[in-house]
Image (cartoon, rainbow, N blue to C red):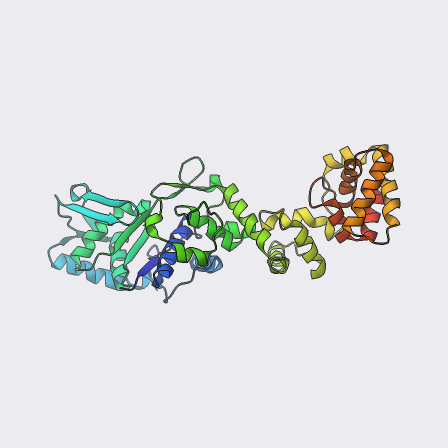
Length: 427
């Protein structure tokens, strides 16, 4: 049997982070078993469904590296099929009409058992399930009915979805039986919760994949983090490429407990992926990100690569790069006012900057090693700590109190620019 799974987005909004995780685990299950991953577009809500949302959802899936195997089907194209199926159920005496609506008659006193792939055995009693609407009076199909017809049409073998669908499962099984269809296997994943244990919402941060893309997260890092929300590769590993995860994935190892979304953990993982990339790999990513944000960097790639090398281990998202490195690309850069007050205002600091400028002006080689040597020799001569020179110099050349190594910064800035800024700060 070829494994066939599906992801069924509704184009009434952007791709939610929880929906992205559902798509991911369906995709990885299909790839793990050499099966097919399919898309079904749930656009029965004609008022709220919009093409712009569908485009964003598909673009976000592609950005995450989740591809699909067949042309997606749209529920809006299949209303006639749903109605015919409902009419057949009524004709068999398993349902009835109520005006223009078609209702399925639920048999009472039955126990419906589900061998859930994640939670194990779950038992439902039909006494707790009321008669189910199949087609509403306005002619539109109800979710539990039309998704059964579509899943059968797509020959879906396994349905992996969130715990919020557990209560839908027995209703859908009743429809499978009424239509004489084979029931697929079900697996229900715990939902992603906020850090406080409540349902993940905007008050916890971004909830759409698009928001994380705009914030400067890498798709492979976001995918890695989503994998860890409910599954573990074992051995306390936290950085795992998607291709390797496919080889290791076992749905039996998925946790049946709620996963809490931790933005700091996501940032840490993203930082690890950024730091592991080659400078030349990050170059187009950072250029595109800055351009998309309207902050295009007007500098040669050679300089940009050097700056990336200094800062890729210091940033957690691409969005942090611009503010931390603005002083490399323009003389109009942000100044830490408190740092300037603390390190540049005193006469002593100005004197130290003047002397340091004189010493490094005489260097035949303007490298980070020669600059550090000059600084430490000057500190020894004056019987002061090197930090007394380093702190004012850092603020003078970068406007900041923290960042990459000062002497590496000065080397990349170049002798002329570094001296110009130090002397300007020295007054």
